[in-house]
Length: 445
Image 1 (cartoon, rainbow, N blue to C red):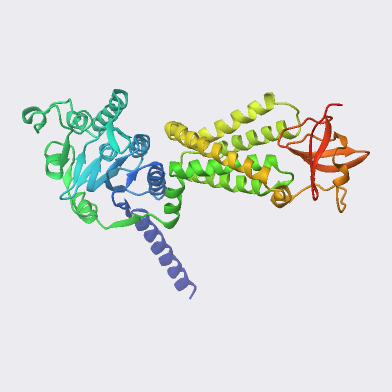
Image 2: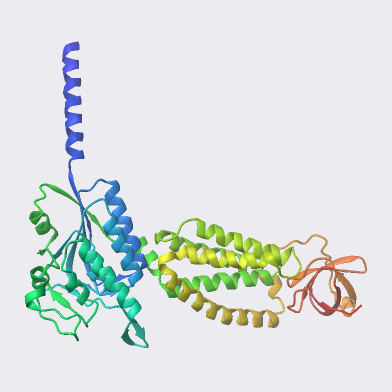
């Protein structure tokens, strides 16, 4: 009986070891599924990076990127190009319909290119929108794109002259030397058959399975990477206009918090807006925790300058620098142009918002009381009316930013200035009383 048990244990171990061996030798193929006519943007660059990292961690033998794109941001395309070229797992691009502009650069960075019937690749000159009209970018941008295409073609051993002709219409191609005729007025765009013939694409294929058959990969385990619901949310949040609005709301919230006593709606709004802003930046793959840490430090320094230190000096300047650096770092060095655009738009929106908030504050009698969620009421004296205080003078016990405390005839009252910042120890005069709201201004002793 004992001998029989030992035999079963040995057989179990043999089966276990053999199954593990088979599992470890599976031909795992990661397929990054096509997004219909997907724009190359920051979200897509982060999406590709995440998929490549996942395939690498899972020891895949091959990654297939199924592509259908009209192009997009050059900075994002360059990021994807670097991710693909640095991948430890071979990456194949499967052009299933379109690889135009930035899509052509991404395709050439892969080890191999397969194209479906009816697909095209090319037209990769950088452009910008002038109103509603696309205009060719300057020579600097064209030169950078041409160099990137050339470097990618060299690395993947593709037709270098043809890759450059996709960017620069001044390049002339001949059938004798380059496999295709092209004059000096037209950007090169190739069909699947043309791309294979002149060594831009490797082969034609009309499905993932057909590619695997051409690659002689037996018994592949296909793992599809597809867009999930949170990807749609992240894609929306990373829109430059949305980021501008989030930043504007956050800055307006800080302004509102400074202008009102206690911790209120402004502070909560700022925390939510900037949390969402940095959340989106972090999950785009371009940012780290360093960016929000520097930003928060900047906010703290400005708070110290406003509430604890009179005047405006080095602490406030360092705070502003910290906020700006934190925002720029969150975009990543390759997206500086987007960062400048987002900050510029947000500043315009904030000017409008702050003017509206200031007008609302001056017109609303009960604004201060309604907006405050929590305030320090120590030493606060409540009565039916403070009308007898009108015209009386006192001393500012705290800084007014614009709220603070005034001492009149030995008693401490919660008050608010007419909007100006007042230093501690200043002589003040009560100019208006509305219910529990005491309004003061500076007075000459």
